[in-house]
Amino acid sequence: MAGRFVTFEGIDGAGKSSHIEALAGWLRGRGHEVVMTREPGGTALAERVRELVLHEPMDALTECLLVFAARRDHLRACIEPALERGATVLCDRFTDASFAYQGGGRGLSVAVLAQLETWVQQGRQPDLTLWFDLAPAAAAARRAAARAPDRFERQDEAFFERVRAAYARRADDQPQRFVRIDSAPERAAVQVAVLAAVEARAWW
Image (cartoon, rainbow, N blue to C red; front, side):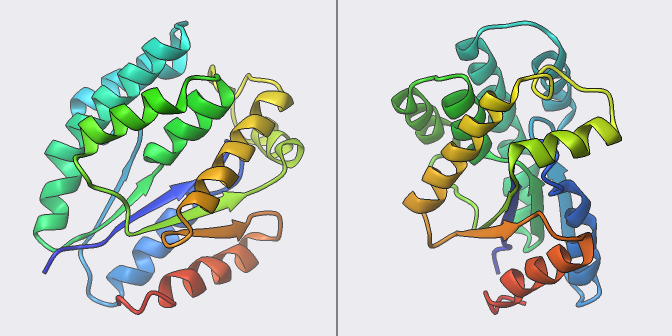
């Protein structure tokens, strides 16, 4: 039986990453094999690309091509094998992030992104995408309290407004797999919403 592919999306500082481990523990407690991974990253090659994307200056198209190259290796070497053996894959970001950041944030053509999506994924899409939605000003306050910023996190509020709007458009276009999670409340309340969204799928 094929596994399930669940992705976690949202602007930097929305809190999505803190909920991946909690969901992994919940699933493992029910006897499921869980693979936690991230993008860019997830394989040795893709992690090297991640360092370039997060820290080296480059234009939007170069950034996008690197992200999709890393995604191809990630799919081939990590995600697809795990799904084929029946594992649940929890991934911190996937292609929706490219439409949001390189498309909405950087202004890259949606047609270019869609073509890359077709070439690289060959039809593979997440079964469920949890979109952690938070106002950019609130996300910026969380980031400032948590860590030193990378080249994405140093972008201004207008950039993150565009990213958030692109996520909203993507969710509107694919409502069958997107669930919006209000990320503004306390962590415990957000965790309840995450588990409710997962349990509603009746896969587990």
